[in-house]
Length: 236
Image 1: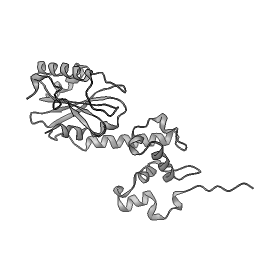
Image 2: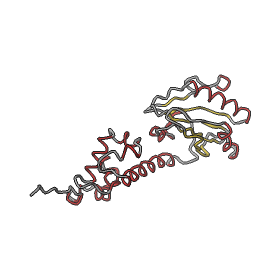
Image 3: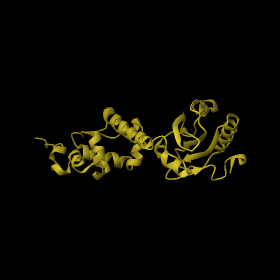
Image 4: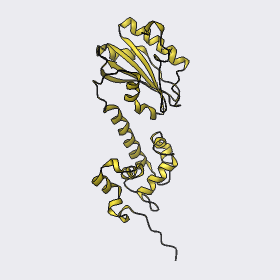
């Protein structure tokens, strides 16, 4: 007779330690990352509970930061994670990224490059270059945030026509350019510098000033204006 294998189940845990019950009684802030992930997963496998599977996922990707950057193909490589669970994880992480952007609602005033980096913090986790613009009114308050282009691992193609189209429609007084470097290093490339110069000149012709170009990296950012990469004619 073979050995009997018992499935580790969440219902076998003491009530006060079950992630869902703990969240309901103490709030989501009281839960560890593995507990929050277990709630998203809902179920485990025949060999491990949802909590155990959450721990394996975090270990496989080196923590939440790595998990946030994982592709669908990478997620399903983890034993116990099929297409449905991979989709649940990706959907939950995307909601978190979108909430990070929308929590700073239009109308916030931009007073420094740090304000821009904070507002665009979600871009740190993107695995491709995203190019965005902040449309500002005359008081430097955000009217809208637009994604102009989503590119490859190394670059995003930006057409001035598309960039300024929404700015003209919304009668924006100024713009701030923002894009991320998936490598984590926010230092501007030669193409970043050339592109910024072209866009600044185009903005001058349209009467729309580009105040800065902020590049978001891993735990740091670069303000091209503050670092001296902006065209000299616009530096105040």
